[in-house]
Image 1: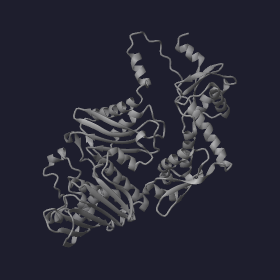
Image 2: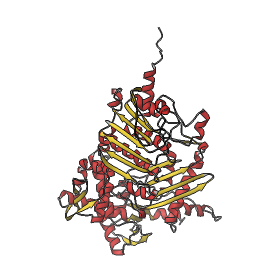
Image 3: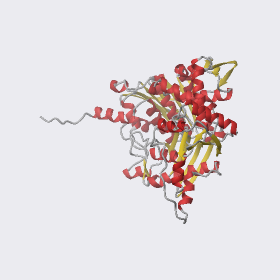
Image 4: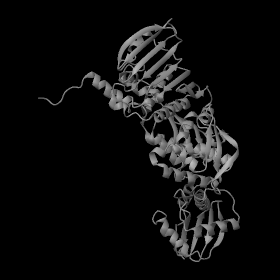
Length: 559
């Protein structure tokens, strides 16, 4: 007897549907894409119970005729392509005719649609892929699709849906991506009949600020680049304005993608400005000829492949670098200095390998430092960043921001231990949060342990009643909003790591910054305290001190 048998069509359909529909966010994504392809200028998304009970997407696009409405949910029914070759020049979001079919197979769907030329619209109810009801309805031109009880007929898949709050957040994030890629379109998002976002048509910059409320115009830099039929445009955050988790909205021909090549190009461009745990905000669109990309490599169309990856990588990286360079026009990087040196015709001295921080543990490095620091002299300050310290046997280079940050961190821990870390406000400090962030406050106990306290009014306005004693009002306000990104990670990383990160971030905010001027007495006091403390890294794990023995210097200069 044969062990191999052909799967029934209904099983094949459900398996295929599972590749396209992985959760609420993927349904929202597919339905918004259909609305955009229909030329909609207003799109409304409504979620009930995080979308697990119902997802409804309505638009004012061109709509569907009665004939099209009857076949739109059948497999491989599409108006976008007619031959295989069309895939390589596709300019629409949808093209395979899989989305509505896949969604209809694992849900209870209602489709209402009308075109301008018909007096009445068409309404269909489809359950598990089968039409159970059809009627004509009065309605405006456009389409409304309701998807209820996702995976109701696939219990094994339904149990893998995430919690209501997580499904809701993921759906909100994909909604925001479309709002960013199409700022000229009106977008409305409701969750359980509560308005979360209501975006009128605007500029991209205004749309970014509406979504990322912790950023203002002064924090963002426009990016414009053009090379051989490629065009990059959008905004990036200025060095010094970071987020604690990746906040990249990357688009190719206005299609949201999760492309590692583009992300890597961005981080390489930022490399000399980023420290560990810091991430820039970036909203960028790469316009590229459709024949140079393949969007048909992922069931959810979230990935693209470039015909010339090296060219795309270099173009994106260099465009972002140029934008950053105009911000720091006078800054000379070590890389550019090395290029000048390597181009010299003078003979090079013998290369000597200096001890690397990566080659010795920080404990070993610091133990060598303290042996020679019974007496020291501050020689000077370099680039408003490093303190040069002369000892009997070696030269110390102290990163004064990192050193001060560590001292503040230890002081903060003592303050919390002594319960003197909280400052009660005489007047409540109102802050602006979106609905997604307000939802997070119910599990933001880690912020209370740092000294924050707040109240949420009946109309969902948030006011701080207490703040950490080390922070100013303005710093507390911005830090509270920025910290909500970290609160999201409590369920994944655990409470203690998140608490330590946030405590380190407060220390960073309170410490003297790179570029701030120190006088000689301040520098001497800072060096003395850090050497006495016996610590070797800042709270984020970066080294504080680099030591170069004079014998190594003599060897380098061939003395």
